[in-house]
Amino acid sequence: MDLAYYFNLAGVTVFAVSGALAAAEKKTHHNDAFSVFFTGFITAIGGGTLRDITLGNYPVSWVSDSNVLWAIFIGFVITIVFPRYLLKMKTGIFLFDTIGIGIYTVIGTRISLLAGVNPFAAAILGMISAVFGGVIRDTLINEVPMIFRKEIYATACLVGAVLYILLERLEVNVEINTAVSAFAVILARIIAVRFNLSLPKFRLPE
Amino acid sequence: MDLAYYFNLAGVTVFAVSGALAAAEKKTHHNDAFSVFFTGFITAIGGGTLRDITLGNYPVSWVSDSNVLWAIFIGFVITIVFPRYLLKMKTGIFLFDTIGIGIYTVIGTRISLLAGVNPFAAAILGMISAVFGGVIRDTLINEVPMIFRKEIYATACLVGAVLYILLERLEVNVEINTAVSAFAVILARIIAVRFNLSLPKFRLPE
Amino acid sequence: MDLAYYFNLAGVTVFAVSGALAAAEKKTHHNDAFSVFFTGFITAIGGGTLRDITLGNYPVSWVSDSNVLWAIFIGFVITIVFPRYLLKMKTGIFLFDTIGIGIYTVIGTRISLLAGVNPFAAAILGMISAVFGGVIRDTLINEVPMIFRKEIYATACLVGAVLYILLERLEVNVEINTAVSAFAVILARIIAVRFNLSLPKFRLPE
Image 1 (cartoon, rainbow over the protein chains, first blue to last red):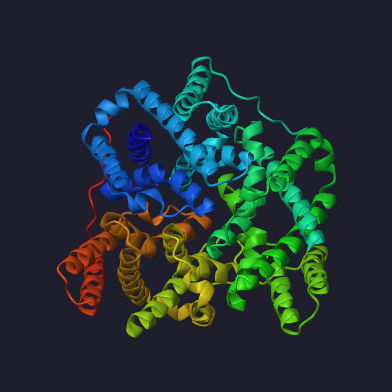
Image 2: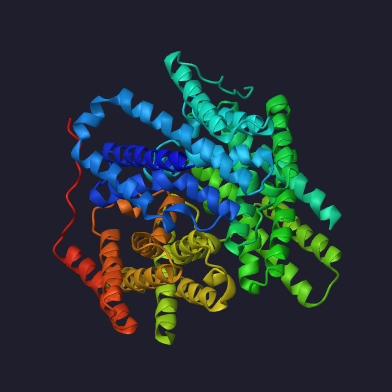
């Protein structure tokens, strides 16, 4: 599990960068160092914290393990020091974020299964771990929450979470399952963006 | 309590329909099957989950009991399959929602009292169980939260919650108390809408 | 600690007034007695409740101690009865709010340290105790959350929280530490507003 631990920290840094950048890009708000840091912080820990308090899974990771906070701080410093570089490497950020949600989904699903919840709840909590930090971020900066945006995002997480649960039932080795399921999220997301796929809009009859 | 269990599941389905429809009606957002489902999910479980994590009342119901998730799924399917019918039966939806908040209020108040909280907190948590899923729904779809809308809604829940607590003090049988207090919420809400009653707006002096 | 208890209740009343007034000032929303009360309630208990559920620190204070709810009710009555007076004494309200965040920050930091969390998490949770009720209030009334406003606010709380932790490491007496650190928050905030200080806006390169 050591590897998963470091992957998770990498995911935390990536989400912190994504949150900090999103705040910094919001021109209508006053974004000082604090609000940029805090938005990164909430984006990075929001989904996992919501998962843990829903499970009663204490202590919440960032409260007991200060490495999580250092990972966020590193993301903050990266954003402050290299903003020009970050803005140029949109594809890089997309890749980092995609890897981040892949990792968060699988770790979140595994933690939920270990807590003994039903498999449907585990899939939903895995997806929430990955996307809810971003939902809180969007709510705070007054943007349309990501679940209402066009691209396939949370759905890719749900696919990976369901795959993880299925493979676990088939008694696939946990490391292999982690890698395969996280990769499935990443692949689903890349394919969706590459080919501009989105789920059909649900239209109400007039 | 068996009856209360099935009433609660019915309430879950009703709230899931209300959330899914609210998302689908939001024309400015991209509403695919996922976002319609997820909005229904959050609306249905938001209030009860907030109550349970505030009480430390673990496991949260939908995490341990997959029937709750099936009830949400049924609400989602109803919304997808019968949207035209649902839009026509506005009165029907109003009635379902009203029955839903009556049930949620009383169950939420009872759970809070059983957790040993003070009666004022129990009344507030009963009301939160009923209305906070809707508040989160409105925040996610960028609408004015329901507690700031004109009609009497949360106040009707508060009335029912207080009535439940009073009748419990008078040692009224719990089944009778449940039925009477839920009915009080429903009646207060119907009378308010029927006669267009609202609490006076609080005006600040100019 | 008795004194801290009553200071905390005073902080609750102050935050309830601030929330109730903020709702009442929102002209685009329907603000009846319920929504004014409920906004005051959420503002007063939001930050501390979020801290407690993140720590798994049960029971949450307002759920077990009805005095907290009475303190909110007093804030509500003050808002309803003396709105004209409150609107005139903007400086008074600023002072009360500033004292409130000073108290909340220090109490929140102390509770987090007692729960055994790492010091960085304790500082963040102390700050969240003080400001997150206001953030939820702003989200509910569709305003820009306070962390994106110009004035130094949360940063002052963070300064006080860090000071408290440092003095605790130096084994300063807890009463003295509480007073000094709360005063540091208050002073930082007063100086910032008096001299119109704000942290520099973080600008992304064009």
